[in-house]
Structure formats: structure tokens, C-alpha cells
Image (cartoon, rainbow, N blue to C red; front, side, top):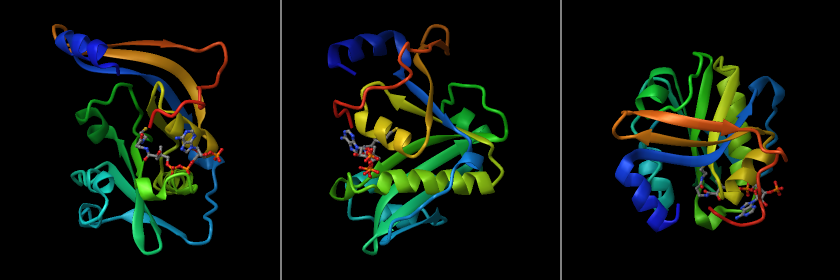
Length: 196
Ligand SMILES: CC(C)(COP(=O)(O)OP(=O)(O)OC[C@H]1O[C@@H](n2cnc3c(N)ncnc32)[C@H](O)[C@@H]1OP(=O)(O)O)[C@@H](O)C(=O)NCCC(=O)NCCS
């Protein structure tokens, strides 16, 4: 968000989102891992916290029910992390939309800078989707910031489909979000500029 626009919005709003909502059904996906990439569920958040990469350490979120983390290891190093949240965890952490109990959000995916553009983000997203499907989730969503070209491309390349464009403003005075959604004429988000 541009800084002046951002500062203005934060005077009246607690949270502001200007992005794209993507979705996928795990039953439609299979994960194909390239040689050298090992994806698996992360049970111990310390594995994230002890990374030598700051952007990975920042993903050491609290473990709680209805949250799941997955990691991609390359050359023995945790190269990327993604988090899903559902149900109470989704609602507690500002979930914008009404998700059913068999729906979840991919809340964050991060590849360490040193490992970017090597297909690791896409493979981790696909792996996470398949594993969430095995855990009983039938539909997954992801909010992507409007100009985050790397993320848009990674999700599209992992098979996710654009649902709609949305802007959401959580008004301080109303203490609830207003969500404005629309379907763009071209159902494709821009992936030319880098916003990651
Ligand atoms: C988004 C992110 C996870 C992608 O990780 P990655 O490991 O580099 O992704 P991949 O190498 O699997 O790339 C997937 C696709 O995106 C494309 N891509 C990667 N970076 C890109 C960029 N900066 N601009 C445009 N496209 C890009 C790749 O070319 C690839 O396209 P293809 O499948 O058509 O060949 C990574 O850029 C990141 O951690 N960004 C910061 C955190 C962030 O914004 N997370 C998303 C929040 S929703």
C-alpha cells in the first residue's frame, strides 16, 4: 500500500485489504515434487524459528488447533514455509469470509530469498493442498495482495483459480469489515510487475 494512502486508511480502518481471492479444491490436485525438494508437515515450530533466514523465522507462528504448517527442504535447509488456518483459528486471526468447517485458508507462504524462482513455492503450495485434502478439507482459499505478482503466479501455477477481486476495510468506528467484491472482466490477475 502506498504510504500516504496507507496512513490515511489506518486512521479510519483497523485493517485494509486490496487483493484477489483465489480458491482450489484439493480433490483436483496432485503434487509432483522435483528431485531435491522434500515437502512435509511441520510439527515443531522450532524448526521454523531456528532457520538462518529472517523471512523464514518470521513464519514461526504459534501452534494452535485448526492451524497447519508445511515446509519445503532443499539441500537439507528449510527453504519455504506455508500456513493454513481454519475454523476458530481462521476467525480469531481476522478471517474475512465465512468459511465452512471443511474449508480453510492458506494464510501465508514464504520462500527464503535465496531459494526463490526455483519452483519451490509452487511445489510447497501443491503439497499443502494435497495434505489438507487428506485431512478432510474440501475447498481452500487464499487472499493475495493486489500487486503481488510473484504470489499470484505461484498460486496460478499451482492450479488455483481466481474467484474475485475484493477490497475490505475494517472500520474502527463500526468494528467490523465491509467487503466489496467484483469479478474482473478479464478473470486473470496481473503477473507482470513484481510486488513480492
Ligand atoms: C510468493 C513466493 C512464495 C513465491 O515463491 P517461489 O518459490 O519464488 O515461487 P516459484 O519459484 O514456485 O514460482 C512460481 C511461479 O511464479 C513465478 N514468479 C516467481 N517470482 C516471480 C516474480 N517476482 N514476478 C513474477 N513471477 C514470479 C515463477 O516464474 C513461477 O512461474 P511458472 O510456474 O509459470 O514458471 C515468494 O516470492 C515469496 O516468499 N514472497 C514473499 C512473501 C509473499 O509475498 N508471500 C505470499 C503471500 S500471499
